[in-house]
Image 1 (cartoon, rainbow over the protein chains, first blue to last red):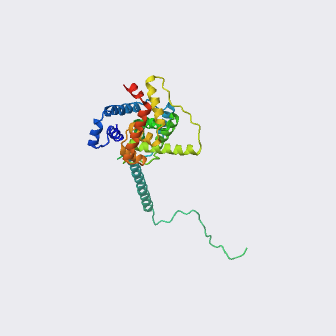
Image 2 (tube, one colour; image 1 turned 135 degrees about the horizontal axis):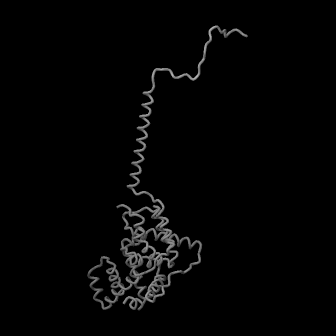
Length: 128
Length: 162
């Protein structure tokens, strides 16, 4: 069997697009059937690999999966929206508080904290 | 296309990734370490998801790069390689060992293209995109790998898969 024919059969077995005339010629060769069966056997043997990682591997990955993961795009958008709502809320509350503070202001003088008494008859310029 | 969750990717593909790595490196313990690294990177969001890739192709892209990193590191400081591949007791599993041995002596490009096709189920285009080879080159590599494996395995294939 020629190398070209073997290659065509190999590509055909992989589901690749092959030239139909080349495929017909390859399949007409006496060894074609055996080649196709060997490719199928090899594939079955390779795919029936029973190996698996040890429990240590699964424990490590489970530990990783338990760690909080980065948010998805939707999660990030939601978190940004929540932050914006909180900021706007704080702004509105601050504005209201300021307005209420202003309305409480009147024309009355503030409550004195110290009182100075001027006693009549004291001569500030006479040395004692 | 939204990125699938790390849990879903792990559940769906960890065995394929591990088995590919085991046969690429010929070392189950090393394959486990690299597979763990692949999924830790995915879980922690350290890898940029490319929606153009299939999930599996994306994972194999990461796995392949980590194997290359490991090979570069070991070239710098050669380490003692302990061959701890599983030795199945059942005779039906003997073919698996023979396949491992036959794959081990294949040129790396052939082994990689063959495993990405047969074990991971990737197409020529996907393998080409991962390895930087043209689809024609990928087809050639897989074909050569099959010829080598047929020659190496001989009648064992027929006896064990009948």
